[in-house]
Amino acid sequence: MQQVIANILKKITEFLEFVISVMLALGIILLCFRIAVSLIHIPNLEVWPNYDDLLENCFNLIIGVELIRMMYYHTPDTVFEVLLFAIARQIITDHSSIWGSLVGVCAIAVLFATRKYLFCEFDISDAIIFRASARVKSINTLLGINIPYENNDRLMDVLIRSLEAENQVPRVGACAYFTDVGLRVAKLHNEKISRIEVIRSIH
Image (cartoon, rainbow, N blue to C red; front, side, top):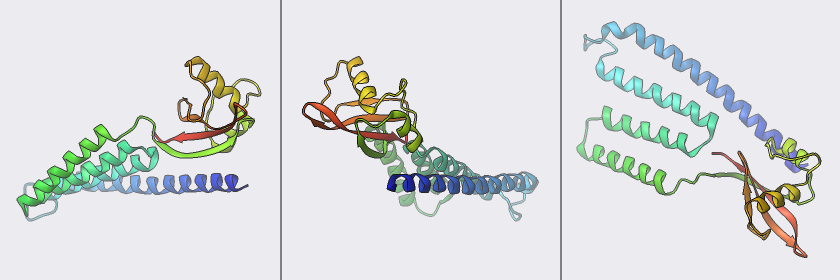
């Protein structure tokens, strides 16, 4: 019951994120039209938008677009791009201090180093433990995932089949990965799999 409620709340938050993304997209579109109509004023530095205004507003619009992608895709890459554009905007539009620009450049270098050495190909969104005898069809429906299965396969059947295909021994910690989900042996009882952890990916 608790898992059903959690799944309902997850769907509600996804819907709210969708609504917010739509509103943000509409606002960005309207601002794009406003800036496009005002481009004739750029040569006049006394009237909005001059070149600095245009540069700053375009960066803001790009950051808004990346925010929409971040809310929709939920991946580390989209978070990285939002932070990258936000820092780049600060460096390019703010000419107050060379030290501020230096800090911004260092921050970008740290972001790229983090992306290169710390990002994983399979990032865990949440992990839930089920009985190995649970039916895959029910798990797919409950969690909104797509574990490939045949007929009335149990989680144990799918996991053992995948492990055997990769020549792995079923032991605690052994994993099998699919498109958007992974299965991990969480517990053994009398040398048989009794609990399986279902790992949903956000990559």
